[in-house]
Length: 113
Image (cartoon, rainbow, N blue to C red; front, top):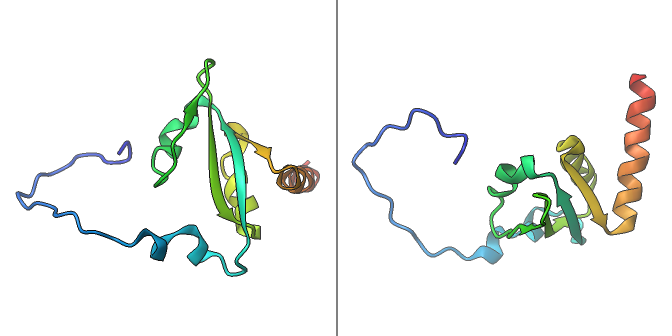
């Protein structure tokens, strides 16, 4: 909730409904059906970003960083999504995803240097 500024109370209330989470799971926005189990290491400054991910429990480390395991679709979107965190995240597993990010990162560096 760190993005909410200048809240105004309206007097109306919210009633929670039961929702079938299978209908809104990651698998439904994956066009090719391939989900990757990904292990990520986040810098402590990224905690507020991951706190907004539904169903993800960060595992805190002694140095303030934290790890998460998630299932995401194995698409080109995934690489762009992870790169959007810049140096705030490191892909620990799977190695194939680490390699893809390294290749694209080198290509970006070469383009802009």
